[in-house]
Length: 100
Image (cartoon, rainbow, N blue to C red; front, top):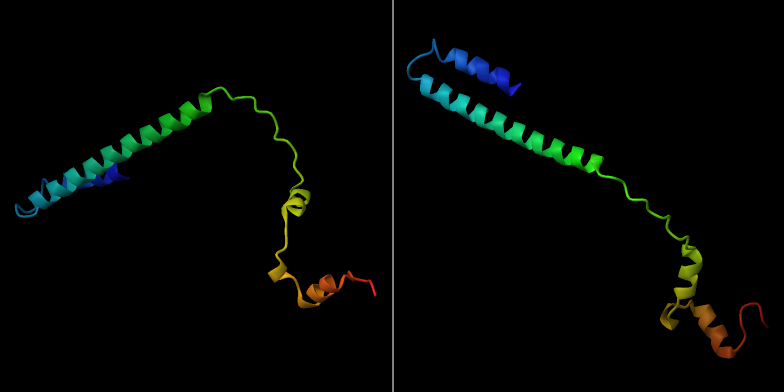
């Protein structure tokens, strides 16, 4: 698309006013620089992508299964300040939940 725009601008410089020619020339050079930079970046990205895809894949062992819920239950410790009020009273009296 930039190449088409560059061709249009370069074609328009031939039959334009002498005052407009320098502006069109600067525009053409800017388009050309953008086109070259875009092309170089595209080549760089494609080269990296192809190089990554052509690497031999490493055979990786599956990860070990860990039951996260049971592990979290083992690690969890409730602070006394976070206990509900009714449970704090029953813990101090020695009677647990459901005990009379």
